[in-house]
Length: 330
Image 1 (cartoon, rainbow, N blue to C red):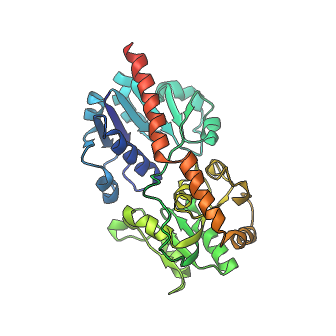
Image 2 (cartoon, helix red, strand yellow):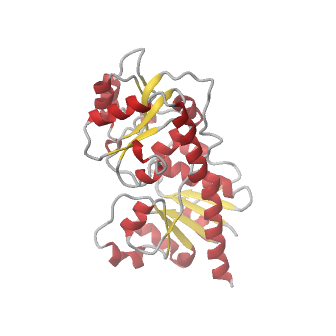
Image 3 (tube, rainbow, N blue to C red):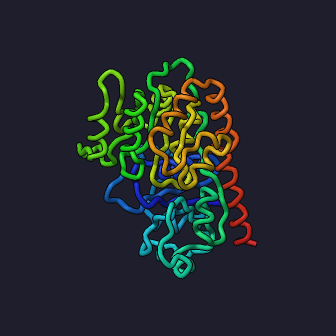
């Protein structure tokens, strides 16, 4: 069984790293191919994440050589035409927070019958037949580092985009007089451009107290996460909430806005959820309550190991592919 992964874009983000990490895992025992559809901008860190055991090639070669082809839901309609010859062996993974208009009318034309979703929230949103497979994190990489000092009260991780709601994060930090850490920066960081959100965050950072890392190499992310006591997820939209799972895997509890599939990411800790419309004061109260809860740090780590380890994602995905391959070749 030969497996191909096709990403829509090469921007650095949880979705992209998930695909690449899974391709890397499959390449240990399977011939694996990977391509990126939109070539206008590919973050060097995304490209560098691909292991040499994965053949990075063109979309045409991925389609030609692969028995199973995994795509993401952002794949352009015009490019999907290339996949029609192997449509029955194409798998789409939806991690979205919205449904396009007239979804049911276009699903048979532009969406293969093999549909995966990353959360119950997305499964219910789509209203089409699907199989839920949780996305996962590398728990051997995102792990607690007891020797690292806790320097910051709260943190947020993710590209500086409006949807991540850094404005609310800063409001909470100011309201509670919390020191803060932000991991991530402007998506097009290597052009020298810094967007308005990053400017705003940096203007509000107190020298010697807060830290704005900007874009950093992936291997440094756990090091910084471990310097925080509490992670905040205050996004306007989330399909699952990788920005809560990665900190929790490092033993950093995540206090989350109740949006999209985030409640599933912290399903073992419903008391860490905050109402979607809650004011900053509600976050401040929870942060103060759990800021130094050592037992909670142990428990959130275990929860990720139980539900969101990438090895579990790999096993479930492998079983799905094998079943599809067997049915096709019987």
